[in-house]
Length: 437
Image (cartoon, rainbow, N blue to C red; front, side, top):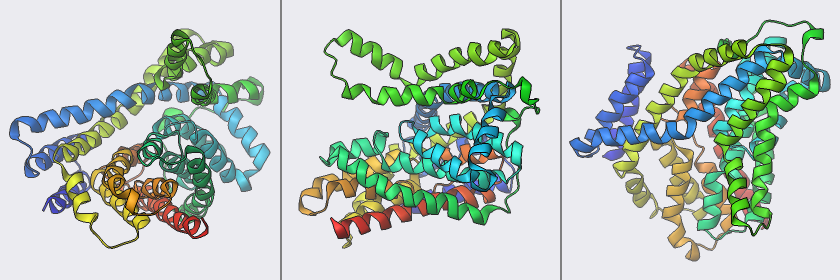
């Protein structure tokens, strides 16, 4: 019964937004409250679930999205994005520019959490789009697919890292197997699938578009690349900290503080405010105006993401994920496929890849000892399932939709099906490795 309620609520959400033209945030609030009541959450606690969901997801994303938008705006307005796109086109040529996008997303996606990487790297896609006028989705999907794959398959991302611990898997082997599966998956779901999306013509949000600047007025290539990728560099360095044996607890705490994504973003923004902002003869007042405009442009994205968080929390608090898991774990199928299936169904029902992965792990972990499967492959199988068919209850769906300025139909055609391909290719890769190991 709970699954039917979820499906009905998702259909109502889509109808409110597409047919009745409701503001997405308002539609999410209405459906979240309705879903909570129908799923049996006490009347006095429904709004608490909604507020907790909004607070939890905004607490994580608000600062990162806001600072990321400011960085993207400055990189665009100073001409750094134009310089970067010129250099990429020069290096790879227009014919292979999507390979450049894919490699950028994959390399940066290993140390970066998905949402951070999305906010930091999508402006680079737009800068190339405005230069060579390839369709934005066709150009950007290889990069987005790379970020998604690294998020679901590879440590140090939250879900695969937590699964490694729960299954007592070998971290090094999981990372190695994950890379073996990730590379062909990105090529299929990013490069090849995006060739079918050339007919999706849209103009991305304007915040990252700047007027064309003469070549002699552009910042240098080194300054441009370093400014755009500074947070990536800092976060990559922060992932090395656990490998450094530091006995002094005070030093450890200081390094952990400066390795926090929020501090990294803030510190990076302050640096490029001067190296890229005032360094290109712009006043602080002009730079702060850029930052104010950037926040206005992403405010709707923040509200929509908050709404998706509310719906997710209602489903968590109602116990739907546990009910689905109890139903599925008795099915007579291969353990690796079962782990993938449980994660996939929870993902489609609830939206959050991390929640889907961790919930599926909680269901599978107690029985892993008698399943006789490679624990590293179970990590990857569940990771692949957790990426299955992202749709209107997932914050990532709305970020992609709003940044690329797409309709819901276009977002499903591009983003949702790309995520489905990632999930299915990941499962196929797991079974191929299982055959040889």
